[in-house]
Amino acid sequence: MLSIVVPALDEEENLVPLFDELAPILDDLGLPWELLFVDDGSRDETWSRVLQLGERDPRVRGLRLSRNFGHQYALLAGISRARGEAVVTMDADLQHPPRIVPQLVEEWRKGNRVVHTVRLHSQDESVFKRLTSRLFYSVFSFLSGSRLESGMADFRLLDRQAADGLLAFREEGLFLRGIVQWMGFPSSKVEFEARPRHTGNTSYSLGRMIKLMWAGVSSFSLVPLRLAVVLGLLTSLFAIEQGFEAIYRKVVLDVTVPGWTQTMV
Ligand code: UDP
Ligand code: MG
Image (cartoon, rainbow, N blue to C red; front, side, top):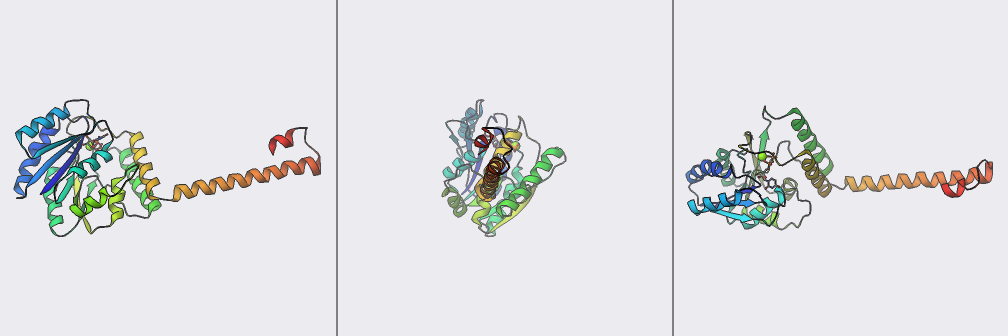
């Protein structure tokens, strides 16, 4: 069985179009499949859409999180409940084109345990987004020593072994892209052209992107920690040197006003 895991936050207008596009493609694969929506604390009608779809087609399942946990945790929750021999994760807003799924399955059938996707940069993407995304991937790769490719998306196939491997992690500040790469299963990649969001707005603000970046860098690299230690040492050395200098000025040169030396030291 193939599981498709779709995290959704306030995607009421997107679930039915996604299902309508995805279901015939999945049927053509000739595999049993399930479509598992993870409602990540939506405040709109997302959950009732999931229930409606579930009535229309019993292969649709839903998982409703108690509150909003964020994209990465919603993905993990979905993967933990997926029953398939392979699990494909994709976004609910149709930015990840359903017609790529058969290519992922084909790569899986060739024996790959992980099939990544790489987003080709689309024209309608802002220059700012493109630059920051490039910057992030190169900084991350440099700091962590792992090869994250620019444009790697949370649209991928994990086979059962890779999914179970992922679930064995008890990470805070989850950065799935990094973990999947770190596990190192035989993998391949498929390129895709991202489409514009079907409806609604992105929930990844600049602030959230920076948070995700920091989660990625701080959990995969010792460089920030080492940098803090070195900076701390340098600051201490400077302070000690200044302390000695203050004493020298008082005792040897005798050029200070009363109290200054004590305060400085
Ligand atoms: N999402 C989620 N929880 C969140 C934020 C986003 O489950 O807290 C889902 C969202 O519904 C979508 C996917 O994660 O299916 C990617 O989010 P979005 O499209 O906002 O990000 P972008 O594609 O702009 O990076
Ligand atoms: Mg999106």
